[in-house]
Image (tube, rainbow, N blue to C red; front, top):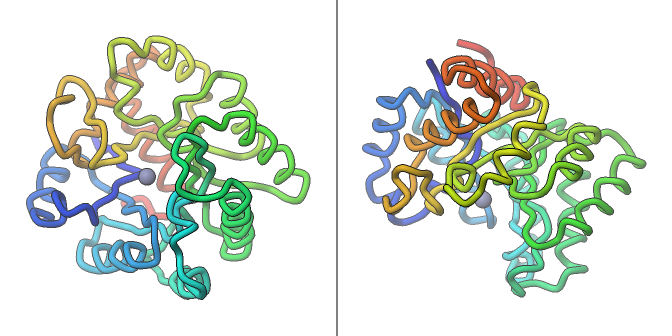
Length: 260
Ligand SMILES: [Zn+2]
């Protein structure tokens, strides 16, 4: 059985300070592959450093909407230079966020459109963050798909079934994180059940929100993605081993990582 953590913020100090152990524990827990996700120019570079150091770690580069206002002029150009690196398998984290007020919404949208353009240009999938802005995401999906095909991930998904369905229709994968396992989130598990299996992914979004039954464990880390995977398998009424096979194959295909 092999799992794939599609979204990990490994540059976090709590994880970085014990990174060899974090990677070892992931491998002991049958988490075979990890994508380290960048949110600024600086940590996009760090993600690549980690990807160069660990064979089963890959990188995604981009500037998170909540960091778009603080980015320096020229940061996007520098991020673009990282995109042709052989271990960069995705573009982002980008997206839209109305929960925090760190950057004007119009600027977030401008950054999002830039990442979409680069995703098409470099033929690498997008990593999309969305928080408290479902209507904006619907609008963005509709507009973007009228321009051209999309490929990517609605990450740490907590939206409703119609939005997931639209995402899938637009070419997106739907990735579930620890919140799927929280007792009160039956509604989210019902949504997960509606997503076609060939578009399902799992992630930790570590260091945030560890899954049950390790919810009190801080920081969250890639090894714990297994719990989210087991929960997703239950929601779909299939064996964990089968869900591991499905989600890992989906991720490898999406990121263009050869099966080993
Ligand atoms: Zn993230």
